[in-house]
Length: 321
Image (cartoon, rainbow, N blue to C red; front, side, top):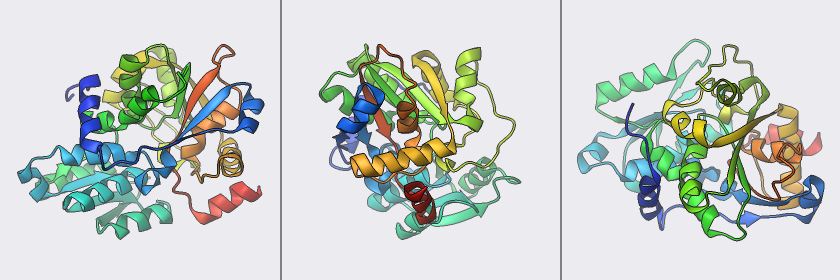
């Protein structure tokens, strides 16, 4: 295992990202407050570059590379949002990028990667290992492998969201975010534990991918053995990341599960009440909040809207369903 990131790493990421990442706004709605009985603020990472929080971790990782490493290029694997974060950061920093993506990746995410000039290598997520493919490319070409969550630089970059939350008004009783590999939750946890320790940490994940929920209940990392299809492609991770779990296993108070239908409903609510477009995985935290899962004694909560790269047919289904 590489080194476990700390708040000091997050503070360094804040400096690297200054002038590059968008300081995303906090949105709110009286109607949503009334519906859930809490004061809810939405951190709109769907308005970040490439419409997802992943840009933060990707840029932090790539900007920390040496001149020699940059010359060799990078390789990453992702169904879409991390892919776009890496491709965007690579374009800005003048680094050649190869992205390993599944054949069923959403078209909008594939197009976003190609628009940045990155090269895509496809794989079948049911029969091939994206990790092996990326590792082989890294070894053959001498490229730096950029994981989507199991990397201290990536975790620290996502942690800049937590710094922005801690610097905002009001003080939050709780924060809830989606959970895929857990890198964003881990980074935000590092920031809030240092800057706003009273803020309680919660997570949300797809019903059929409740690996964090199971891990929290058993006290050890658990793996999902069945991997059914879900609209939440961005967070259909079968097991918590090794590095993130070291942090999240201590910081998470509870994890809630949400169905695809609940995420579609959350997309519609976000569109109508907040004026933003979300993808299903990016709507998991708001779906859990709308389901009134959070404890009654939580009065003020920050909800992370983590991504907005949704295919048109899925958006139409959400808005007209």
